[in-house]
Amino acid sequence: MGTALITGGTSGIGRAYAKALAERGNALVLVARDLDRLEAEADAIRSTYGVEVEVLQADLADRTQVQSVVARLESTVDPITTLINNAGFGLHTDLLTSDTESDERAFDVMVRAVFLLGGAAARTMRRHGSGEIINTSSASAFISQGNYSAIKAWVLNYSESLATQLHGTNVHVTAFCPGWVHTEFHERAAIDASKLPPIVWIDVDKAVREALDYVAKGRVICVPSPQWKLAVGIARHLPRPMIRWVSSKLISSRHKAPDAH
Ligand SMILES: NC(=O)c1ccc[n+]([C@@H]2O[C@H](COP(=O)([O-])OP(=O)(O)OC[C@H]3O[C@@H](n4cnc5c(N)ncnc54)[C@H](OP(=O)(O)O)[C@@H]3O)[C@@H](O)[C@H]2O)c1
Image 1: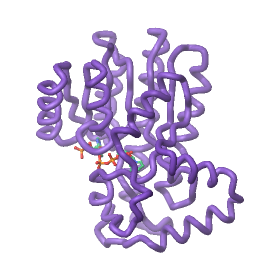
Image 2: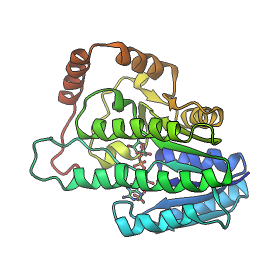
Image 3: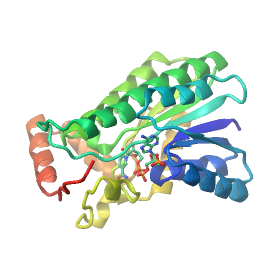
C-alpha cells in the first residue's frame, strides 16, 4: 500500500489524514515538533491499525530541520508514496505591523517548507512513476483576509503549477481547501470562533476522505463539503471588489488577542 508522510500529523487535519491513511493500510511517517505527542500518536495508530509508524521530529520553520524531512522524502529505502504537506497555523496579524516575526514564521512553515517538501516528493515520485501529494491550502485562499489568505492562495497556485508540471507522470497533486474545521488551530492562534454558525464547520474525517479520493482521481482542487463548494463557487464568480468587502467584514468580526501569533 506504500508509505505516507504527513506533516502536522499529530493534531487536527493531519491526524485525520493519519487515521484515514492507516485505515487503508499505508505505513506512516509523522512529522511535527512535539516528540512526546508524536510518539503517543504513533503508538495509538500502531495498536489500532497494525501499520508501521515512524516519527520524525522537525520544526518546519527551521531550514536545517526541513532538510531532514527532505532527506526522508528522497530516500529510496521504503519510499514515500503519499505526501500530506499540511503543518501550519493561524495568523491574523496587521499587514502594517513592524513586528513581522509570526508572519515570517508562517512563510517558513506554510510556504518555504511546503515548496521544499513538495519538490523533494515530486522528484522521487516521478522517478518511481507514481505518487500522491496533497497540499493543505484553505477556503480563505479565495478571499482577501490578510497574510494567511495570501499564503494559502500561494499554496493553491503552487499546487496547480506542480500538478501542471507533473501532468502525464502518474504523480497527482491536490490542493485541499477546507472551510472551518474543529482542531487546535483557532485556540493556538487565539481566534474566537465561538460565534460562528454551525453550517461553516465541516467534518474532518469526511473532508480528508474526499481529498484522498480527489488525489487518487487526479483532481487538482478539493473544496470539501457541499456548503463550502457552494460558497467557494460563488466567491470565484463574484467581482473582486465584493470579495474584498466580504473579507473586510469577516476581519472586523474577529476577536484579536494581543498575544496571538
Ligand atoms: N482548522 C481549520 O479551520 C483550517 C481550515 C483551513 C486550513 N487549515 C490548515 O490546516 C493545516 C493543519 O491545521 P489544523 O487545523 O489541523 O491545526 P492544529 O490542530 O493546530 O495542527 C497543526 C499541526 O501542525 C504541526 N505544526 C505546527 N507548526 C509546526 C512547525 N513549525 N513544524 C512542524 N510541525 C508544525 C503541529 O504539531 P506541533 O505543534 O507538535 O509541531 C500539529 O500537528 C494548517 O496548514 C492550516 O492552515 C486549517
